[in-house]
Length: 190
Image (cartoon, rainbow, N blue to C red):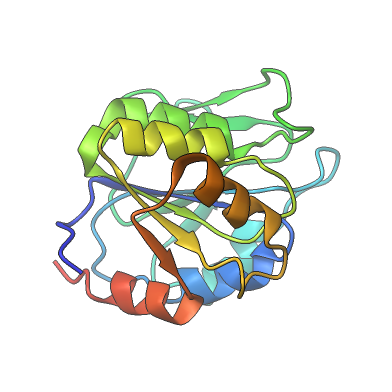
């Protein structure tokens, strides 16, 4: 891997994503100094519980994003139920109740697209398992702005539609297994 340390990381997941995220978030080094923003498709009408679920298995602090929350290095923020998570600028995130994307709110495309616009070639986007094509437009935006995209190998994904769609639509800088993804994340130490 020859990628410089990213300025920010965005992660998208859907069906099968909770287990994949458990594996991936556990691989971030404790001294990881970029913000990590996550969209996991979740029901719009129930509390997510995702931050509590991952807090004990991740070396970084994990929280649910709030509107106008500062982007803090080394902090993992999850999109809350029924809100899109957007990167406003290099300092803050915002929440939006714009229309669902492919029936999902939160959706992956708005996060990836807004982060690509702000962070350009300093962004690392990771797309994991899922059963829709949400994330494909976002991956295209990240690559168009010079960012790096790692997509989970569809052959390994619980639901291969999402990673396969993104690869077909926009390609990827790397198609990775979760084990390879963890190795890559673990190499970011300073």
